[in-house]
Each structure stands twice: as C-alpha cells, then as structure tokens.
Length: 485
Ligand SMILES: Nc1ncnc2c1ncn2[C@@H]1O[C@H](COP(=O)(O)OP(=O)(O)OP(=O)(O)O)[C@@H](O)[C@H]1O
Ligand SMILES: [Mg+2]
Image (cartoon, rainbow, N blue to C red; front, top):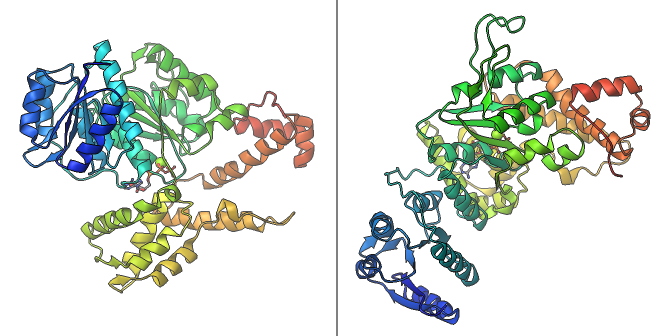
C-alpha cells in the first residue's frame, strides 16, 4: 500500500504518537499535527488519502470545517474521533458526511480496521454521503456513554442517513421507542409525521383496519371512512411497536404491503402507494416465535433489514449516574424538587439487576424525588425503594415443584406497576383478556414444545380437551406445525 497517506489531526500529542506508530507499522505514510487549520488546508489542497481528526481542536471545530472539506475533496474519507461520546456527536458526524465516527478511547486494531475500510471505499470511489448541514440543539435524546451505547449511537447515526426498515430489539424498558423516535427526528423524514402503533394494545380484530384504514360500511360499526396508520404516516415514519404480538392474518397482509409497496383499505379496492419508513420493535424473541409458528419468517426478514439491539441496563451499569442526573433534570423541569444522590446511593443503584431496565430506573428516581423530603438521597432510601417495588426477577424463580405462588406474586406486582404507570387514569379496557393471553400463550407454547407439537399429548399434559386446545391456539395465533424435539 505504498504511497497511501493518512492525515492525523489531534491536539493530544500522545494520541498522535500512538496513532502514527500504529499506522506506519501497518504500512501507511502519516502526516500529523495539532494545528487544525494548517492540516485542514493541506487536506483541502489534495493531500492525504484518509483524514483522521479529533472533533474539538484548539483552533477549530471539526464539524465546522468538515462540510467545506467535503465540498473540495468529496472522495476523501474523514474519520472523526471524539471523547465527547454522545449520540449527537455520532449523528453530527454522519450528517456531515464523515466516513466513520470512532469514540475515544479507541482500540488501535479497531481504528486500523476503520482505516482499511475507508481505503477500500476510496479505491472503489464510493465516498458519497449526503453531507447535510443543520444546527441542532444540544439536548441529548439518548443518555449513556458506555461502550455498549457508543456502538448503538454509531448504528443509529448511520441509519438516520438512510430510509431502511429497522428492527429494534431489546428487553422491556431499554429505550426501543425512544430510539425509534430519534431515528425519525434526526432522519430524512423528520418533517413528516411519526405514527406509533402498538400491536399488543389493539384488539386483534381491529388491527388491520387500524393499520390500513377502512371504508365507510366495510364492516358493522364502520360508520365513516377511517384513515389507517399507513395513510396517516405518509411521508414520515410508521413505528410498529410490539410487532411480535401481531396476529397472523395481519402479518400476512403487512408482508404483502411491504412487498408490493402499496396497500388497500379494508373494504377498499383502489391500491394506495405506501410512503412510510417502517421501524418495528419487540421485546419478544422473534426467532422463538418463528419456531413455534407465531411469527412469519418471511415477514421477519422483510423487517429485519437493519437491526438495533439495545443492551439491558445491567450490561451498562456505568451509565446509571448519567441517567439519574438526566431524570432529575427532567423531573425538576416539571416542578419536582431537586435532590442529590450520594455516591453511595449511586453505588447501591449499580448493584441492582434492573429487570425493568431504564424505565424502572426512571420510575425509582421520580418516586424518590416525589416522596422523600431529604435533599440528600443516601443508600438507605434507595434500598427501601428497590425493595418495595422490586419486580420478580427471572433468576429468582426457583419455586419448588408445584409451587405456583411465585407466578401469582409476580402477576400481582406486575399489576400494581401497571396501574401505577397509568397514574390517575385506568388502563385501556380488555385487561382480563390481555393478562390471560400473556399467561396462556407461554403455557400452551411450552406444552406444545415439550410434546414436539403433538396436540393430543399437549392437551393431555395441560388437562384440557383437544378441541379446547385448538381453539386457544387459534385465538392466540399459535400456528404449530411440527417442532423438532
Ligand atoms: N438511553 C436513554 N436515555 C434516556 N432515557 C431513556 C433511555 N432509554 C430509555 N429511556 C427512558 O426510559 C423509558 C422507557 O423507554 P422506552 O419506552 O423507549 O422503552 P421500550 O424499550 O420501548 O420498552 P417496552 O418494551 O416496555 O415498550 C422512557 O421514559 C425513555 O424515555
Ligand atoms: Mg415500547
């Protein structure tokens, strides 16, 4: 790779030395300096094959210069490195056409990898990014500077520059909806609407009409034409939340819409062009739903074009202080009194397993601010709150044979939390069916899985007759064919 030159700009001499040595060992020529203006000038004049630069420099801000360089050297891949490590740094870098954003501190091998990819792209002459420039306020939509979140920010930043269908996976409360909103608000369709629809919250017989709309008189009760989500989200983003709960028939219809790019309303005949970006999310294990016949594999592949997999909070405990500070700010701006969590209190929070993830943390912080009079929150207060509201943890389910009390204890706690979440209001009607469904589904799926899909045996195991089992399977969308044991 003789003759390939990398420009390195950083005001930190240590970074320059380390990078230069590694790049030279990998066979590149290196020009480096701390004087950003001079280095940028050099790049603009045609020197260098790849540019690596820090964001904050003594005499310039890389984001200000980047668009100008992109104009004069559109083929030059620019790698941005930064210790700021926020989602905005990643998004800005992507917006302004950076080739890649690398959070500091970085792994040398990772950096070399990025450089190699940049070289390849340059050789293919593909360096075309839409360097869109627009000022954005610094309020961060996503909090957390952990490694795990850095990775997420990079993926998000890249996805905001595309119109790809995105699947967001992650446990409950990890921020799936928030990420969907960020993808919309910082993406190409941000001037269009963001429409969210939750598959688990709509009665199954209404899902198709909710998604695609219906004509007047299409069914009993359709007294007027109703525009569905696809229509309302036109030009924007359609967020299909809890996609794992979508009924089979609706899945089939959705698949067809995605394949054909158009839809018809229920009772309608004229096809309408679908002009939406789809973002789907679920906390369920879709692979398992596919294996048990509850989710269409072909639909999964249609939706899973790009994946964002959000880490559970217990895998990024170092983000807890930032998150706590963020939730305090939010609560204060809503009129709650400001309080201070002591380091010991934060430590206690870090020891928790967080089965409810960020949402659970948010609730705890808000509760503490609302209930406790003390200005300083110590570990005892945190302890008491964690104990009182601890949702059952999966690991804690060690019940003896025949001991079902843990299941009902969990149900009780879940219901308490559920009502609490709705505050003054009642949850939407149909609670009995929703809760029963959540118990019946794993129960029947487990029975079928344990009997290799043999319905006679599964019915026996469950102690119900086979027709009842069939009826439940139908109602629950469990479309079991056969299962390898
Ligand atoms: N990285 C983050 N920074 C700041 N707030 C966050 C972050 N992640 C989640 N939250 C907050 O936590 C709460 C839960 O997030 P969200 O509703 O997006 O989770 P979810 O993954 O959709 O959960 P569920 O599967 O239960 O629907 C929200 O109030 C959200 O604003
Ligand atoms: Mg959600």
